[in-house]
Length: 301
Image (cartoon, one colour):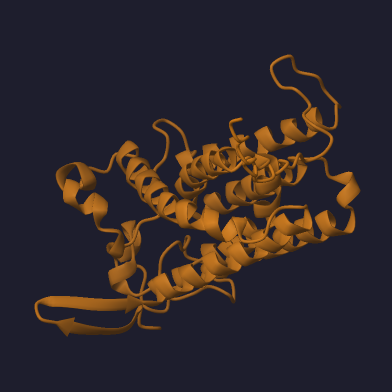
């Protein structure tokens, strides 16, 4: 297996460690921002806007991802963070959730768009394909960390999981010896995201006139929601809603898919809802005001 730590060194009493997870994740973030920037400018947006927005969105996304992970675990019955509140801030020990990153990162993106008078729908549509593809690029980090795997399998693409990284009944090495292989759940999502992200990007570029503002992001909700709903069936590490076989993450994924599908129906006026307007037919671009040149004061006569 690959060592999750690239290297580490000490300066005094402080140890600095570089993890593959962090390197791969940041590479995915930069790739996603690069692609979103191209899509944003293709729609008429300004250069550098996405990169400037990333300064605000990235920290918010990390905080949101961590808080969602902590909340998901706590609601699922874990007392780890309530008994060890200081561990909430221990991001270096792992534990991020994409839903929280999108939620809080999206809220900050909305604020930044309003602040700079930019059409938020343009930002959402530009970011949609990059969210799928960047997430796919980040998934190999889960393989290195030996996490997000599924149930034991005899399929040829099953992966080995070392004893210290196993959960539940699979920690019994007599019942599940070293030769046991497990579903590479992260790889299933990676393949789904590459296919759907590439398809969405191709369609948006091939038929730009067919996609009304917000439609690309609505399609992302459907594709990301359906994919995650399926993949969650292979995620025994996710806490279940009491009395059901449905995890909280799977419920959110299903709601995403349904919400995105309804949005598309409303957007193209296949259905009409009083509380949900169809939306604009084109992106709006704020008109920059020319700097006002002060006129010379009239001389007193």
